[in-house]
Image 1 (cartoon, rainbow, N blue to C red):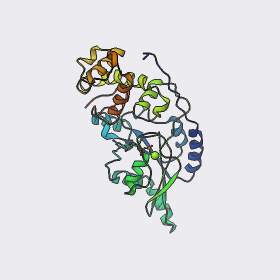
Image 2: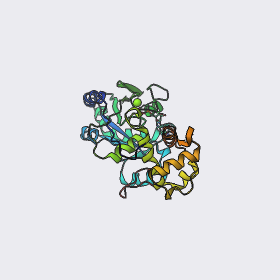
Image 3: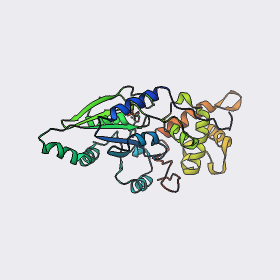
Image 4: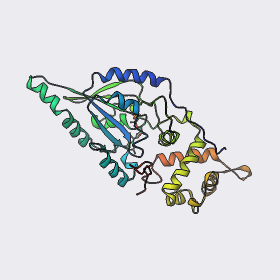
Length: 288
Ligand SMILES: Nc1nc2c(ncn2[C@@H]2O[C@H](COP(=O)(O)OP(=O)(O)O)[C@@H](O)[C@H]2O)c(=O)[nH]1
Ligand SMILES: [Mg+2]
């Protein structure tokens, strides 16, 4: 395998269509819930989407907070007033529903004063795989939106009634056409936002190991049975991980494909513990 950088070209054709649809649906929305990933609250916010929703009332949710370092999430919440940290798999949604009610109180009162029963329409937006459909299911109390641990599961827009006063719209995840920052692109790929079919998994795992080594060397040592990972660099680290976990092929060569697949899977499943890859200001993640 090479140690070079394999650029990520990631903008699937169907996203242009998703964008147009979203723009159309936005006209009907009273409120927008923007989901980002609590492990990478910067890289997982789509600047194009933010521009599109800038004229709307919106709320930011840091989802998958159960996988992020709690202290770093606290820092993000101080940095982003009004944002809510969430585990969509577990939360009963009360915090989110209360916040939505507060955000639209004026609107509802305006209608009520005219004797009109107003149904608030809220759109859930965000990059792929961030947990939009899971949140809808949690708020609805049943599996009404399809979910899956890969991008592109939600194809069409589905309005879902949550209460007599609230409807939610699930939307397909949106990426943006141009991303100059390859580090940010990689972080999005680490967490499964960009389809694994369009990225070089060996290159991705190679960089993920480098990042993890810098952030949480002890956990890398423990999980992959590597002595002093902080002293190893690049391909030497990947080799040590292969040997540590026994991913060796005939002829005593390292099985990089197997290594890459498992390293990514284990990171995504939180097997290395709660890790934030981005922190406010300093720009570096921290560990618990
Ligand atoms: N650990 C964790 N996993 C979550 C959370 N929310 C969603 N997921 C998982 O993330 C994957 C993508 O969820 P999905 O709702 O389909 O994402 P969408 O593409 O934004 O609609 C699924 O495997 C979910 O089970 C969360 O808060 N914590
Ligand atoms: Mg979805």
